[in-house]
Image (tube, rainbow over all chains, first blue to last red; front, top):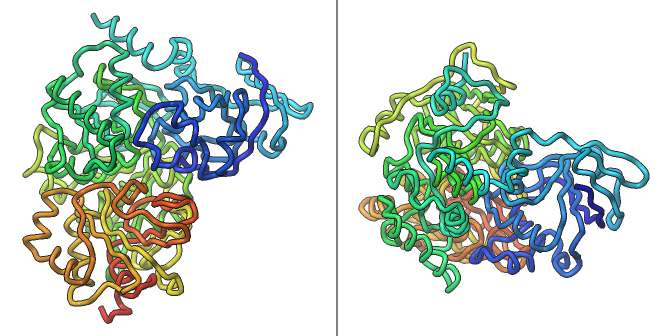
Amino acid sequence: MVFKGRVWKFGDDVDTDAIIPARYLNTSDPAELARHVMEDADSEFPKKVKAGDMIVAGKNFGCGSSREHAPIAIKAAGIQTVIAKSFARIFYRNAFNIGLPIFECPDLAENVKEGDVIEVDGDRGVIHAGGKEFQVKPIPPFMNELVAAGGLIEWTKKRLAGRK
Amino acid sequence: MMTITEKIFAAHCGRGQVSPGELVNAKVDFVLANDITAPIAIKEFSRIGAGDVFDRERVTFVPDHFAPQKDIKAAEQCRMLRDFSAGHRLKYYYEVGRMGVEHALLPEEGLVLPGDLIIGADSHTCTYGGLGAFATGVGSTDVAAAMALGELWFKVPESVKFIYYGKPGRWVGGKDIILHTIGDIGVDGALYMAMEFEGETIRDLPVYGRLTICNMAIEAGGKSGIIAPDEKTEEYVKVRAKRAYKFYSSDPDARYASVREYDASRIPLTVSCPSMPSNTKPAAELSQVKVDQVVIGSCTNGRIEDLREAARIIKGRKVNPNVRLIVIPATQLIYREAMREGLLDAFVEAEAVVSTPTCGPCLGGHMGILAKGEVALATTNRNFVGRMGHPESSVYLSGPAVAAASAVLGRIGTPDELGL
């Protein structure tokens, strides 16, 4: 999995209320959630973001609520991936469970600017940005198993079938 | 040599021993979701095609966030919970009139118990650690998988120990202890870890204060908070428990990623300033901050003891004319008890409003939303940008004593300023 995209930058501790404010949680429709993605961090963001873009952020991305609406809004807005120094735990699980690829890369944020185009090589675990190569932290083997199965729901179907 | 958390995991995956970092499939004792997270869980559950849930007595939905149904969309979401619960004959379902804020309600109902492994599609599921359970927040898809299988995959977390000694000062409670701790370690200070709280201060702390502390483990990035159960826990659960439970405790030689100690006698009445729970200051240093709204309630501080504490300060006084004081008993039982004790009368006489149980304003849902530029002080758990309303409003967090005193003063203040 290799993909290229334009970077939007955010800082440390981007919380789930910034990613998708609770006032929009009276729906779980992905398209509607996407219309408000990152709105409380940057009110113009939903208008500016284009399919294929990427988010690069600091530490503890996705802290706060367990709302799966947060990675759903990001994915439905066409954002290909989020690359952060670290992720809050529930956001990390949720992203894998719904099939939004995310990567932990401690050194990337300091080395890219908003608008840069970077290339993510998910198979090799490296990111190419500004002529440099950055290593991403390896994905735990079980998470790879989940991805290979097509997400947690597909994995659960198989496990359930195995019991019968 | 295992921690309480490792012992609970070992027991739930049929093993003698587990170690931090291991990935395990563990049985879950209880699974919950609310009116925001359950709709997605229900949709994903139907995709699995499992038919029935793994155990109709161990899955529940609590419509508490946007309930009583605040608008048509919220009503549609709540109806999904009710229809699913009826269709799958779930034993426990809490319609408006029986419901309360989930993390106050389920301990009260005796459905979450010591030694349990609990998951909930709500980040404050970690509250139940206050009873000696391993409890953690997950997303809706995880809940869907657990509803089908009765188990879920986990990484056994490392544990970090927080030891408190000394007698806390007057009015200082569980909220001040946890806000002070988060202020010390930061909003990712315990990322992915089980936060284990112990020491003489914790042993002296009643169950409600322990629930408050564990409730906010997530605000330090923790996977869970936990306090070893003891005779106070036993007294609380024995009259409520709807099934058997088990006490676990950490071995003396259990391993911790780190250990921190605090002298609780030196923890001040504490306030988190906008816009992160870790941005803490002593309440006494914030007397210049005027407030437009005070909220007393939530899964953090909406229990009867919290209301009693607030009422001791409010009774016989008036809410400052520039302040809206909104008091939200967290469950119907708490509401009735507060009514019997005359607490609600004291609040209303002071010109506060008393709401039906709901998460409501805590997440900017309804029942007290902030306008642009307004400032609130709340006994809730998060003060992120826009949390209670307009993105340019702001939220301070405190315990009930500071909240009540501030409602009277019209600015952040402490009970001693009122001669208490």
